[in-house]
Amino acid sequence: MSQTTTIARFTTRDADFDARLDALLAWEGVSDHEISARVAEIIEAVRRRGDAALIEYTNRFDRLSATAMSELMIGAERLEAAFASIPAAQREALQQAAERIRIYHERQKPESWQYHEPDGTMLGQKVSALDRVGIYVPGGKAAYPSSVLMNALPAHVAGVREIVMVVPTPDGVVNELVLAAAHLAGVDRVFTLGGAQAVAALAYGTQSVPRVDKIVGPGNIYVATAKRAVFGQVGIDMIAGPSEILVVSDAGTDPDWLAMDLFSQAEHDEDAQAILVAWDAGHLEAVLASIERLLPTMEREAIIRESLARRGALILCDGPEQAVELINRIAPEHLELSVESPREMVEGVRHAGAIFMGRHTAEVLGDYCAGPNHVLPTSGTARFSSPLGVYDFQKRSSLIQCSPEGADTLGRTASVLARGESLTAHARSAENRLKR
Image 1 (tube, rainbow, N blue to C red):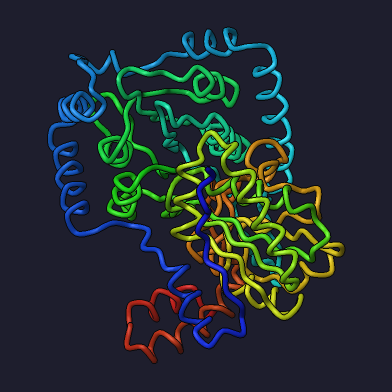
Image 2 (cartoon, helix red, strand yellow):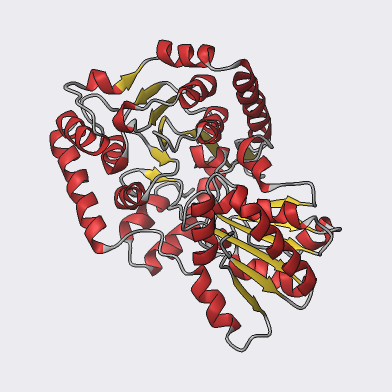
């Protein structure tokens, strides 16, 4: 006998709608006090003892028996061998995805610029790539070669000089697809490290692991907590929460398609979030029926069922305009506009990580091979954050070169403002360049 699926169902007209939606969306991306304390201890140990601490923690947490860091390194030849050994279909799929990701991100590259004022003063901006970045990739059974491509290729396009990858190998499990993706994406060094200890090694450096300028990539609660702890010492991409999808449907899409789209995010883990918004009550019931019928066929049925029960919802709204209001309130990581006129609806969308437009554009295509990055802001942070991109691996320097005339003009203004702030040395420094 099939098990009944539990998923929240409510309408925007419910008296308690706002409170229920707020409760549904609530998520603290980084951890409780106990986890923070444990992470702080690990980071401090790696800072003090370097490689020795890395070996100790890796053996303990990943159930290995390494005696030297050389056992926790993977060289270029091994990466190349992994690429050559995987089935041809997988190799071709990786290559196709990599090419599409590279082409998309090439279009993001900003250019340096400058202009000259009439008196000869030059002002501008110089764009420079980071020297070295670290990529964290989940390992073991939860292996994501797509994450290797999505993190490493934009860094390459940006011009990063060295890319260092860390990937845990619990019980010695090495995923060949992940290594193959690292070879294809041009990763320079790979260490089989994970958890807070890997983040600490990248942030501070050890005898073997080089210190990086920025750490990117997804991880568990310990990784997220460690990234937050080392921010400032290094840059980070974001503190990522569980995966999310918000689907908006006008009742014209096959309910089975929509059910599977919801499953595609719910199967990540029990805290993932899948929400469907529509303005046709019968359509929502049809999708629910599809969920009930299709869920028992899924390999990760238990995870999907728990995810839908914890954080999933079917929401009945009053129409397309209110659906757009909900989109901007939720600010989802992934947004599917499964409607007849997605271009019209997208004009009103201000907050979303990635927007999938039209009935045939499944979110999963963005996960793997469409081209745009799948590293996206979660937990409502799309209100102020963007997808990972080339710009995350570059920085900008301002350029100022004054002509004698410009130094005179600007110096007089600066002198007045500096003396107004009682900063006499500032004023006199500017005044030294004035024409007498």
